[in-house]
Amino acid sequence: MSAVLPQTIRCKRTLPGDYPLPKHAKQGDAGLDLAMRRWRFPLSDVWLETSTTLAPGRRIVIDCGIAFELQPGTVGLVFPRSGLAQHWGVRPITGVVDSGFRGSVCPTLHNLGSTPIVLEVGQRIAQLVVVPCVCCELVAVDDLSTTERGETGFGSSDLRLVPSEAGGSAA
Image (cartoon, rainbow, N blue to C red; front, side):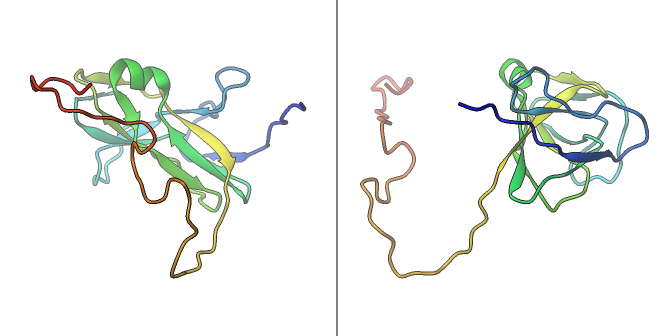
């Protein structure tokens, strides 16, 4: 099995300063860590370059201060950092960075936990995973080929929810 060689991706800082570029925290990590440079509330035009407290149930938009030049045939996917998601319930709303996009990456963070969390400028808040992307041309047809699964949806392979007689959790 041959080793996968790293891909060179051009990027630029979109805010003043000489802050670090995103990087893989450890060799072999899939995601490039994205850090908070400034933030704003959704639908607001006012950016703040300070720490903030994200209350449970609230969302904020984070400007990571970085733009990428992804190669055609690739896409950047914004995913949670496992520590923030697992320990605090804070996660970005999953996003797509298309290869033709040249603007600053600005994920929306959502606090799904029950505890307010303080976010600091420079704190790693999400990760960008760059993957190959298959672009498609759709063709309208009257029928699709049949498969064993057919039209069955969520949980079709093994989900068995049975309401509890006592009103508790499902078995």
